Image (cartoon, rainbow over all chains, first blue to last red; front, side, top):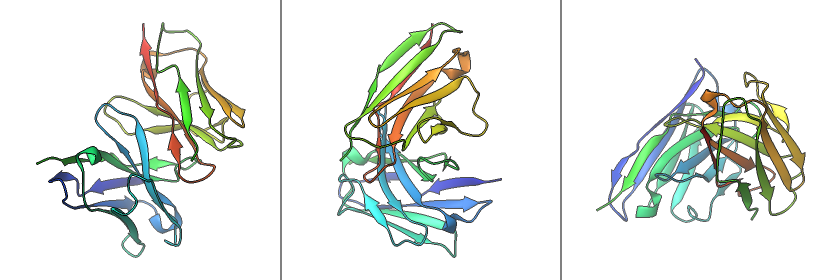
Length: 117
Length: 107
């Protein structure tokens, strides 16, 4: 079965860190650009970051710049999102998504992140 | 940065009705627009890509139109399983951006 599975979410204190992972099964993640998208409780979708298939093109939303780092390990078929200096406003379900926009799009089930003292 | 504006924010219609959601981009994005459906408690699902192309497996009652800055998603005959949130998203350039969403309710 072709799927993406996120992990690493949970509870973090303001100013703390979490690292999310997006693991692929059934296909080679190394062939695709991967994106992180988040959805705060009761809110809409917000694109967070993307990384190209070789990792040579990386983009961040303004809300993530300087605090989040996206990376990939193509040998392990996984993409990571390291989140530092977390704020309450980062509380959301975080989804990874393959090919955001074009055909062939695939989303994981999401991992919840709560930032609270 | 490109801003995506959707309307209406909520729509309610009976089963069988034709409904349309519109999406406006703050600058031209050509046809680089996607539409997603998000059912309650689920991840989004791609319906339409390149403004008007139906993703494999999506029912033909869904259609997309438009180019440049004005786009629309039409459901030709609303079904009970169509309730949920609908989002447009531009992928012309970074930062990628979603519209604010439209909640579709069944009367």
